[in-house]
Amino acid sequence: MLFSTRADVDSSRPTYLDDLLRQEAKINLDRAADIPDAVSVNRALNFIKHWWGETGEEMDVNVFYRHRTLEALGFAISHHEDLSASPKIIELRSGQNGVAPLLIFAGGASCFLEMQQLIKEISFPGPILGVALTAFNRDRQYPATVQDEVESTLKALQATGIEGPYRLLGYSFGGVFALELARALRAQGQEIAFLGMLDTPFGEQEWPLTTWAKFMWQRWRRARNRKKNLKKSGPPAGDQTQARPSLPAIGRGEYLARKLKPLSFRYADPRTAYYPELAPQWMGDYPPLYDAAARQLLRMKGVYKPSRYDGELTFYRSLQGSPVDCDPKSIWGRFLVHADWVDVPGNHQSMIVGRNAGTLGRELGNRLMR
Image (cartoon, rainbow, N blue to C red; front, side, top):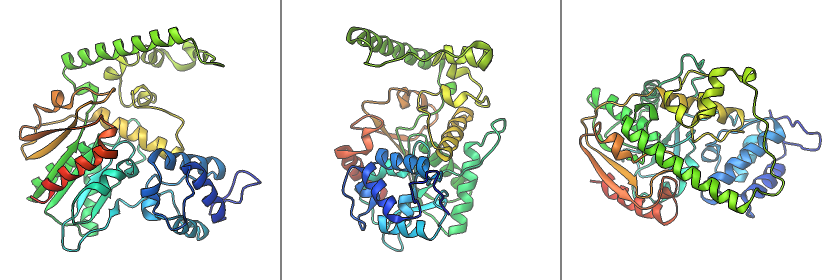
């Protein structure tokens, strides 16, 4: 049951949920409208964060695939359904019976709304299923690994009766899960009909030193240019510099790691408490469940060691790249020996939205049905 932390909010009333979601979505959302199609990922996450702040209850980031309309979500809330947990396998799009599904791994903290436009555009007759990240809730000294996630997925596929031939697709670090799942399925003698990786990085600690050094130099130059531009324009109105934490307050190791960020991230131990906050992707100020998922994922990335994969796959590389990751071909090329490299328009984020999503969706559809 949901209990509000504010006296003036009755969080059990679906009308409050309707008003809040419409407010965050910035549109007059009909109660029967499909939320994943109508609401952007950022606005949906803002709603989840606002709801948590108002009620003390956090919804799972993929809740809108279980309850796709305001009416369905309000019904679930009024019947005290637990909305904080996600099934391992999520139906993202229905499809024809008898066609083996496409299994997708999302990027980030396993939020499939980020990929919704691409999911709509993939010309594939079968169902499209999302594989959600398992919350292992491990002590940071013994972090969950990519192999743990693969084993969790294999159990879920067996439990749900999903059989091959398998079609696997992963966006961003989700591509690593797709790759390692394909490796495990091939070891079992299963057929991999398709394996696709979308702009997938891996941890800086495994980049060749020359690649890492060149990328850090380019990143430093970009940061220096930004600082110069800021000095020319002057500080924003009301800008106040935060006080730096004292050395004894956070410990010498953490102080030096933060002081030398981003150079320190390559050499930091993924088991340290502050490791996720050194990552260039880290934003902070997340609700608890999202925070835990983000920390777990970054530690997984930090301990992952890539190895040679002998199977066929298609690697989709964004033409404009990512500001926080190097060219994926420069790091994956020696491991993915039979990869078909396909350059697609956009950067790491925009390759799966708008017109770029349509282009990529058609390309994926052609390969999925070969």
